[in-house]
Length: 311
Image (tube, rainbow, N blue to C red):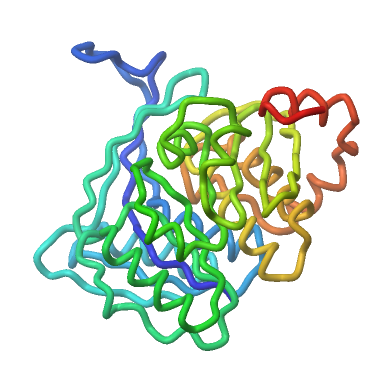
């Protein structure tokens, strides 16, 4: 079983030809709201696409947005542990999605900021605790410490990017970052390989967009090339990857198998609009994987070169 502790936001999404530059006003087109938030997205991905028993600790306000967020989690089969903040509104995010499927996101944390160390229940029976950085850093560290004390594997998706101290990283078993987040955590602008060598976490997984992903676990490197899809909206793709990766690991999959499942799920999420609404079912994920060719040696070598690993 997986326990996720993190954020839930209602996403306000507008589509536009391009993401506005500083000081620029862009006329948008479609506007919709979607349930989101990194923690909630990852919990839905673990439960829906990963088919794992998933619980989540989250904080919501006493507002109409809270009902939408709670319903989305429950419909995905996530068991919710809700802290109700009567003073702050539920978290929100304002997202512009461009015609080339890229996005720019601003988050108003709201009730997410009220999660505290005492809110985490006992983790008896759980194999993995999945955390992100949209809730107070002190609470994230306290949850990691509690999980470590109970023999639970700690997984941290270090997003949104921020420098992390050595004490927190020492509590992490698996770190998940994208390429930009990798440079922030490593405090280094070199190659993927150089940055990985600077992070003292046993297993670090790096998502690389259209290139694929890689992982360094102790001294072993695992590579997974990207799956080709027609992207509509990349919002939530990284969260889908994280949730499915942890779901696969919790069910005894090897790291290589988990990376393949997570990469495929993240790719499928790019083909639909929204965050949680884009996450595939487990059946859709399995059907997609069954239709995909085996990664070639040439693809693996290209990814090795991209990351800066010796071929």
